[in-house]
Length: 606
Image (tube, rainbow, N blue to C red; front, side, top):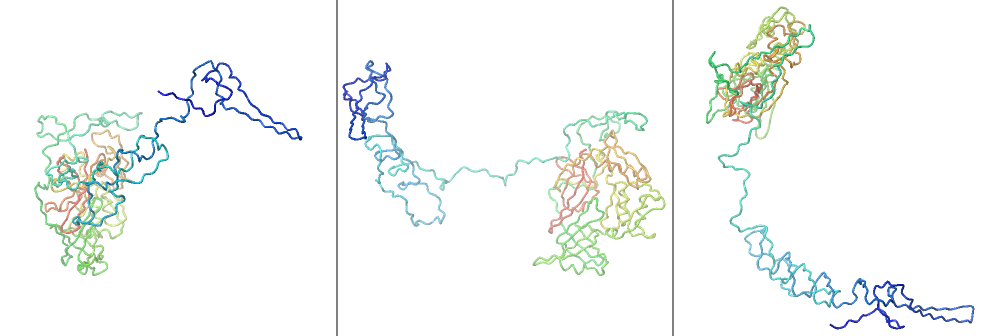
């Protein structure tokens, strides 16, 4: 190995040789010789002096000669070294090879993934687009580097673009156009599947079993505090009361919990289950008494328990306007509407024109023929004891002459003392006032001048299973449930009912309960007998507890016709029979020949 000479940045000290001592701390360093040249000229009172200080060694140089070696201080940067770690530069042009990077576009590639053409697929040639870079360039102009030109080798930096690479990683094509097969995607709906997973119903109308709950109040005898209050403690009956009677009177039977009484009470009209139901719908209006016939393009008919007559509307051809016009301003125009061979007597209240090119129609609206009972304002009263039915007959009589209307009385009659009945209003208002005393309501006859007086609850809901006979039984095959609700009413089991100025007053308590949940008191001037007292109390206590009213839509069948409010309906589906009372009916024919009736049915969970 050749010798290495130390090269100092300053010349050698002229005073003689000195030993190099590195890192010695033995005593203070000796003072170095100092040369000072002073020139003084005494020719005037001005003195000129120059001082030259020559110190070529740094302050860290020591003259100590006792140590041959000392700890060297690392230089911050080697000034001249034959080799040093190369510093990466931004670009390297002298490297013969380097890793290639994929370009955004490979002009020289022989094959590439094709993209779908937006234009016509059959064009073999089209105008070429100028490329940004030449594909045949072998050389390009290099940018001179400013540092480390003489270094033979250094770490290469990958170029952003490699023009000379014969191969590169291909970019996957976003779409494979020529694949004959590919992975299928599952369909959202199976349109032609013979079976599919059924969606659970949100609620069943009547379940044979339900979640257990705490026993309601009534098993503990409540003794009122104090004496002399006149209250009689309730003594409950601990005997078992079954909802279903025994099949054979006196015969032993096994207890079956959750069992429905069999056989069910037969309905008056039973619609059998068929694979197909065919009904020929028709709505025809006849002008009375002439009998001129009109075909209805659309038709609606509505009635509920709070309405005492029908409400209807129809769309007819404009030619019917002349035949339906009034001959006098006070004339009441009546028509007979035949819906699937069942007639209804109706009256016209208004008539308007509905013109839409190229057709011209008239819109007719009206009510039932009982609307004539709402045209007067009179005073009614009784001067002698009369029954409730006799009071209604008196309302429908003027000066001993009947108005031509009769009653279909379906509630229990009771005696009303003289002077208890006083009312100002129309005929139908007085009739409804009498019926409301016992919780009853009035419904019209479809064709005759007959008013039906119906009880709101012919039997309490907790006795429907054994006492309520269905008028109509509909299977689920001929109807569909369009709406189902759940209503929780207060669980009243006692109500105080009585007259106003005279009559009876007292509590009505549901059997088998403690009567500890008292409903608001009910008073009416015509509650003057025990029969009225019991009927009104039953109506109040029946409208309590958990109710499950639902709406069912069905056709207007020849066997049933339009099912009016007050009918007891048994609807049978996969969950079993659902017994209730029809509360409202709506008949709709938006466009011939589609005709449906929607029934609102009140049912109870118990």
